[in-house]
Structures are given as C-alpha cells and as structure tokens.
Length: 298
Image 1 (tube, rainbow, N blue to C red):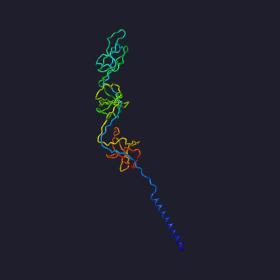
Image 2: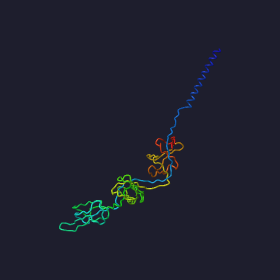
Image 3: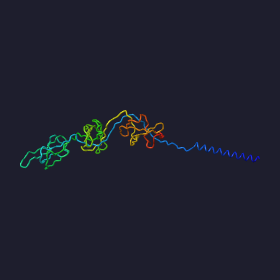
Image 4: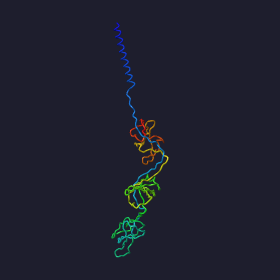
C-alpha cells in the first residue's frame, strides 16, 4: 500500500512538471515572437541658410571690330590698280584702288576707290583686270584697335541681360587667361526666325593677341538676389512633376516638396517648401524614403 501511494505521488509530480514546462514554452513563444530590426541610414546634413546668389549664364561669342565698313567703287569699270593689301592700316579717304570706267570709243579719268573710315584692311576682294560696279565691295576696313565681343541670346535671357552686366571671357587661342568686361549694347529687337537678340560686350582692356573672328567663351551675370534661402543643388531631386528633398527631423527623414528659383553652381534658391535652419540631407538621400530612421554623421 505504501509502495502504491509512493508510485502515484511520483507520477503526479512528473505530470505537474510536464505541464509547467509546456506553459512556460508557450509563454516564451508568445512574448518573443518574430521581430524585424529597423534600419538606420547614415546621412550628412546642411542647414538651410539665408544669403545672396547671382545668376550666371554661359554663351559662345566672337570678337568683332567696333566698326566694319565696305569700300565701294564710285563707278563701274575695270580695276586697273590695287594699292593696298590685307592687314594694312589706312587713313580715312585714302585711295585703295583705281577703276577705269572707259567704254569703247570713250575715255574717262580713272575713278578712285577710297577708304570709308580709318582702320585696318581686313579683306581685299577686287583684283587687277576684274570688272566691278558700284554694288560690289572692293575691300573691307575695320577698326581693330577697339574690339568688341558679340554673342546671341535667346529671347528669355535677352530680357534679363542689361547694359552694364559684368562679363567674364576666355579664349581658346589664349588658354589660362581671363578677360573681364561689361555688356555695352542689347539689341532692342529679337530676330523673328531665330528668336535671338544680339548682345555686345566691351572688354575692360585691349590685348594685341586678340583678333577679330576669335571664338570667346562668355559668362554673363544676369541678376543678383539677396536675403533668400539657399541649399546645395545636389540635395534636390527632380521628379517628373515636382522637385523635392529630405530634411532630418527628430531622427527621421522627412520628404519636402520645394519650389526652386535661380541656381548658380551648386547653390539653389528655395522659393517655398523649406525654412531657415532646416537640416537638409545632402549625402545618403538616394537611399532613403519618407519616415526612414536616419543617423547624422556630421
């Protein structure tokens, strides 16, 4: 009897132990459960600042003489004498050539072709023995001691360019050197075919190495704005219908749709969407989405 009782007690104890283990394991399953660790992205930020920016646009231009005039004969006839060559400096009214206007059975005095202005002869198209007329240019005379730069701007930009705007010019023929000047003339009309306007630039100083016809690369300052919000342009993302960026706020990335004004280099004007002091994410923004956890490294 005593042995049977002992056997029942041992059996009951084993059963209780098994029940306790079962309850404990189930509780652990419920409490632990599958968990996904949140990813934290490393980023760098730059504060939105208030400052000024100057809009600059680049153009291709050409050196040109301030005055270019064609020397025209006063009479039709045969060219009998040419007195100048290309590159020769001439005075106003200097004789460049003589024309014989005689006809069969008639004799006339030779008619001179004179320089219309003082300058340099840049081309001579007439040759001895060649027939010419009052409608044919014998030569071209230009004032090369007072060179200008000319370029064309589309009508959108031509409305923003004004006389006095600063210009920086470089020339492929003179590498490594920079020339400065200012806009001296803006055409009052736009070509109806090309939709472009002619712009003239006066250089601050002349240089004997500059020659008419040389190609110039021009940077023209259009307008300056002060007291505006500025961010690095590289922080912005241009989508199909909007431009946006991310700011860091409370350890999270917050997507902001912005309106952008003028841009110069890696600086861009923010018209709306951000406030001064906002921490714009400038590195790592290509890997994040709105609401992601971020860690600022800088």
